[in-house]
Length: 284
Image 1 (tube, rainbow, N blue to C red):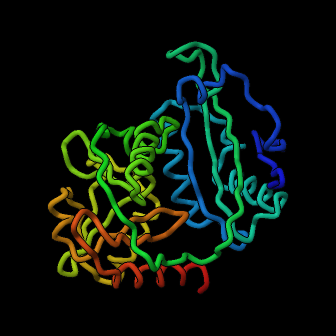
Image 2: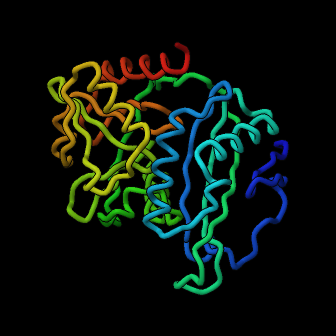
């Protein structure tokens, strides 16, 4: 039986088995919240500044008000590190930081102040591990993702990803792509997508409805600093069928190589190269 861990709720510690929220919690009732999923390695939260900026930007858009003294970049980072040490997970773990509005009212909140909760989950690998067996990628087309500012931030409404995950399992795929309402590819279930064609890297632009991924940002930066050609452009199924390589990116896994999509099979040279560079950030 797995040992219980602590969670940090507004700076106070509780066991993850304790009842903390009531049924009136707005994240539970209305999905009125945001979250960030981060990776900690050797006591350091990777790319924390980018995570904080994305969360802060989303909160401003949702009119969420916080106590700046307790919700500054440094204070939240301090809380994360303290919790990971208390849970003995600071060597390597996944960190989830969730923010939700404290309020009565139904769809219209009576106030906009917020609370936060932090969780850590231990993982085995410190470095990013390249998957030797490529993913079998499918296409989810039972629902589409609506393109708006909300589609770029990580809200607590994840129903389209849940449906895509069920579809993935039912059809025995390793992951599936999600289309937007314009008919182009937005992203995978929990990752952004890149393809490589004739040494050009292509990824969907933010205005195609994908999450404004933190790892996506790092990969674009790495490619530019290495003078690789990187284009943010809409992708279709036809683009994937003509690509030389396809890979997915997120903060926890780094880069995940896709081996097959429909009848297409892919190489993995660029995926391996990028994984080596990411690991140099962790183990300089």
